[in-house]
Amino acid sequence: MTAKTIGIIGGGQLGRMLAMAAARLNFQTLILEPQADCPAAQVANEQIVAAYDDPAALAELAKRCDVVTYEFENVPVIAAEKLAKDVPVYPPPKALEMAQDRLTEKRFINDCGIPTARFHAVDSQADLEAALADFGGQGVLKTRRLGYDGKGQRVYRSSADSPEGGYAALGSVPLILESFVSFEQEISIIAARGLDGAIACYDPAENIHRDGILHTSTLPASISDETAAAACEAAEKILAALGYVGVIGIEFFALADGSLIANEMAPRVHNSGHWTEAACVVSQFEQHIRAVAGLPLGNPVRHSDCVMQNLIGDDILSVPDWLRRDDVLVHLYGKTESRPGRKMGHVTQLRR
Ligand code: AMP
Image 1 (cartoon, rainbow, N blue to C red):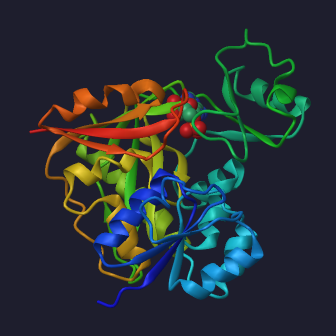
Image 2: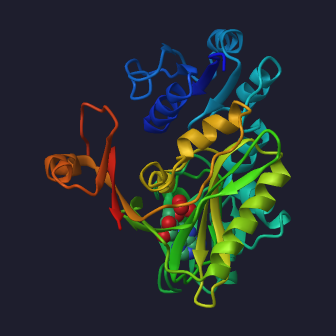
């Protein structure tokens, strides 16, 4: 195979792990990221230090790369569409468009025949009050754009929670109120679609969040085979509807009766798929590189049960202990400064 160059927009840990997987398959990687010496650039061939929508930087990316992908979903859609005129961009920019706005995303997921929480667009305090009244005073208010790790959210647990000032408290920006879902488990599925249309689904992970940030992903999830199959079917519908190429992460709430409610999708490799590097022959990172490079998808079968745990902030201090264990794969992101809430690395413990 002749080495080709893959452009990656975004230089965080996901870009880093993609670049590492790409190198193993003889690809060169070129990172576009405004922060110099970012986690991805430390292991990639080269970095263009510029904004994600810098026209000259995008032109250089198009010129030097055979294909361009991205590691986060807030790449400006216009920049991705413009780039796609000059070089293949995978996943397709339409996936970015569907995932960037929670309202568009929920409508799209519903159009694929997959249930979500009920929702109302909220563009004023009056909208919020009407929407909360419709949901019996309960719901989760979220910013439509740029929310992550539980940021930009407010939970209304009962009609005793006053809606007063709720719209302004989230910045008077476009919001969405979702009905409150009483779930048994939060699960996610990592799936991939190749250039040839083939689809591969990893087993669903069961996810626990702490302070809005993913804490652990456990395999297998405590769900039935039917529920697991339903998650894969939902992923197949979404991938097909988007003419998708690459890896996608889709989060669901699993209800007591085993049915699934889709929460959100990320058109990229996903934190809840990091376990695949330790418990599958082909990780989500290699799978994504294979897909965008037009190679056959790898086998997503899991050979071990496992638990992936994020190392957040000072959790990084526990690395010497993790390194002493013989059943743990440690993965660090090359970030020199630890801050509360910052993802510094992760560990995957195999349960044999
Ligand atoms: P999100 O940013 O949409 O992933 O939401 C962050 C977390 O908030 C989720 O992982 C859930 O634990 C909780 N959450 C979000 N939306 C809802 C909902 N509609 N009902 C109940 N819990 C929710």
